[in-house]
Amino acid sequence: MFTAKRRNILLTGGILIGALVVTVLCVLWCCNERTAESLAELMQQETQRDDFDLSFNYNLGSPSPFTQLLKTDAYDPYTRIPGEAPSRVHIYTHGGELFASVSSPAEADLPAQLRVVPRVQQHKLIYRRHPDGLRHPLRHIQLTYELYYDRGSAPVAVIRQMLELDLMMRTVDFIPQDDEQVPPEYAGMTASMYQTPWRGELPAKIDADPVPASMLRIVYALAAIESQEQAEAAAGALVAFADQLVHFEPYPAAPWPGNWGDYATDAREAARLLTPSLVYLQEKECFHSAALASFINSSAFEIIFGTRFSEDTPANQGPFPVRRVADDSCSSCPR
Image (tube, rainbow, N blue to C red; front, side, top):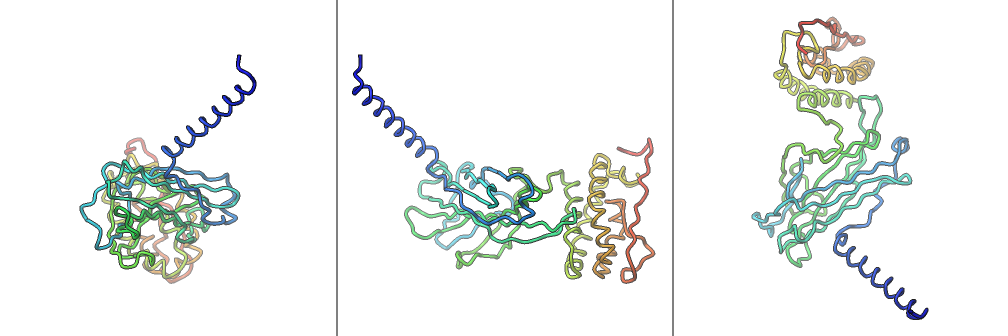
């Protein structure tokens, strides 16, 4: 039988070996994981729900929508990252603060001469009015992946991605960047953009097929208007966007929302979400923008939403009554 002394030696040795195994596994599995950093304190309206927690893979080898590549003259344009080269991104809230962490992709997923240093930070905080009538704080989170050759001390290129985090709606979206915008810390680099299709890694604010997604984009754009300048700027873009959307109307002869066929339910829901914004714009008299009032009173707007301002109220006179086109039901209408 083992003596007590020998037993203690074995137990101590087993503990040390176990610790060594755990350490080795951590090095093998988690050496690239960065400690979560506090990005910001939350606004009061962001703390009304349970904590938010999102983890997803950001694939360096397969650009996401609106990915920006910043590069120096030293960057070899033929540099390629084979495969996905995923980086794990973790964004969460706890104790009234916003935290985030980001890991480097595994070395085996990168070309031999390439080294990646990831960073995450809150780029800015903005407020935007939403269809629920509330101004949501929107946090623009910046992911950057600095690319180094061998043991170089300066990055030869940077992969940059902007995310819009809406904690009130629990959504995260890839958002566009200015093609020519270069952050001060990367001054001297040139910028190029990669426009790729929607990918689905994130809990996006608008998660739908192209036709209903386009309806919702108009809803959100109208809800965001809070000044005459915004109204004038939005009106022209919305007219062009709506004119394109109505070309996808499958049953023009059918009454709304049957004219949208399989998307009739989506059209009705979009109109429901839009109603508070129409009331708001009615109260604000379209911020005295004749262009915006004309858009809301247009045939394209009625085709999409079945709702428009009455035709007999000029844009610069009095309130803008909202008139809903009858949602007639009939057995012969397309569904």
